[in-house]
Image (cartoon, rainbow, N blue to C red; front, side, top):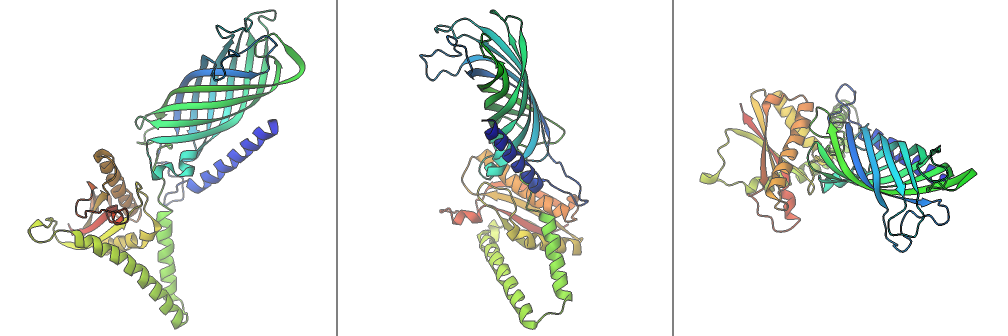
Length: 412
């Protein structure tokens, strides 16, 4: 069993460091850009059920009740620090009291345990991709080392105590109440590899005993920090956005300055033209949906209109549209008399409130890319439009045209 927990811990640490490396965000100076809160504190209470070892005649649950979850005598206070959106560490202090269940045939006993656990935490919600379809539910996985003091409170060994130690592993489903508060549920398994007393305190083994315990608890976490969102609920960063734009620009410049065979240039141009045609085709379909004549929106002096399309329930800008955004950045830099209007839209699925929030997040995602590209925030305006009412999509395929941000270049 000890080897199994060591393996689980090693795997969790490996996942954590890999995801931390993959999801750390860097600003233009190469430093970590922590635009989310990293600290949280939590309090939880629930049930404990020691599994083994027990002295004969002593039980933690009534032997006649197979599905008993134990006694409501578990309390936990924790603090957590997230290095990234996907990986962090936690320190937990807990108290458990163990007594014979009422109405059972167990002999009377009373013991208690004070425990401290240091654990690695992986946000499985981000790893699995929860933000692609929900921003309300999350899932954490934690494992690490625990040390405890085990007290005997009555019986022939009353007043004696011992130190225990081992491993702990658990899963913590989350429900976001607000940006500051999160409802937690936790199921954990504790393994003691250094235990000499039985859980009832009436038996011992000077060599060693292996103890096991399950806890089930619920509670509340408070997210601390000056930013709007905690790491658990922060949006996944755009796919190395500006780095990809810079790489694309560099490759274009390099191609223009290099001497290559004409047929190679033709091949690249054809491929680039095909990509541009695909993007233009989508833009044309959206542009065709805009009312004309007396019903046309009264925006002044539209120079050019672009569209960036999104996956279902996502505000992540796909790499397919980086060249589109790079073009907008270039136009704005070359024409200081222009400003940009970003209008976010969704398809009809979801509530009105959630769609307004999603359309706002989509517009903000594009705005953030423009700002990182050197466009002053004063030149950027965002609008959350909610459900797209210009194009009445009837199939999931057609709804892709609803899920977009329209980029309008206007005269100042």
